[in-house]
Length: 401
Image (cartoon, rainbow, N blue to C red; front, side, top):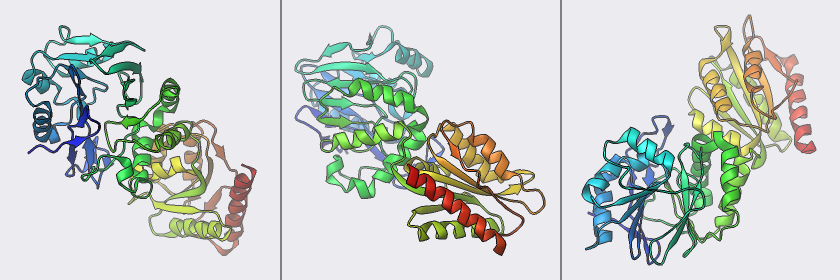
């Protein structure tokens, strides 16, 4: 049975929610599910903005049929070809054989890679700044390459001030009956998932996000319609400001992320003493055991806070396995502008700290403190002064900033 949500008099959400998906893209846990957003505009011509993942295809086609009523579907705007938004594209073409597809040249190429139907005869190819009229509504198209695939574009409806933003401004989590961000306590219940979505899905491409933000800076956005998560109709500017901060790799707040890898608890003990001493100085600290905490959660915290501490045992003369994966992931996500400290442990040949530092030096603008702590098996009484020195160094960088 269909389940629609009205956005405006002319626009209806016809997407679906998947609460059974365990790992988004096979990588990121989504314990609260995820939404796949698709929007139908009813004008002189009917326009569908994107399709959905196969997991919600049944309700999607029921939604689409109900929203269209006796009318057919004239146009499909494709913003992004990732299969969670395009899997049902070919079936849409089969059900509505006279449909035209509005996209860009790179999307045409990707459609040919994913599907076998004739796209050339259907494609209406848009370039930067092109305008398309559906009747009352005037759609302007902007290219947004690498936010977060190379073919991505976004659409601005100048009539109602609606920005269809593709994966930008998305959020993990099923919608649970609400459609607008102001219907829920977004800041407390969803902002963490919005940050986790940005940091892990789009975070690598900060410069490209900055370029997109410059393109939309002059637009009067009254509705923000992403492909995942809630539609925004209030506080849009504040949410866009989050993207400006995240994409410039500017910490949201001062605080220390302590990620530790500990086999028998000794490295964890050192990390906990450090966290305790930081809190004694009024410095916020959050701790993560890399062996049990998904890397996506730690990367989310790394995008949020100003300082990072990596505490790792040495394992087979290298970095402990899960810590190594985390450090490589952080480097791959292009994190920048952080202050970093390292604690290494090794019963006979401590080596993890040197290797961690070498990896993090690949990132831009990383202030790696010289106050490295070397543990031989377990932290000793005499080394508490070294922890205090590390706290001093962290505190000074916070005060200086």
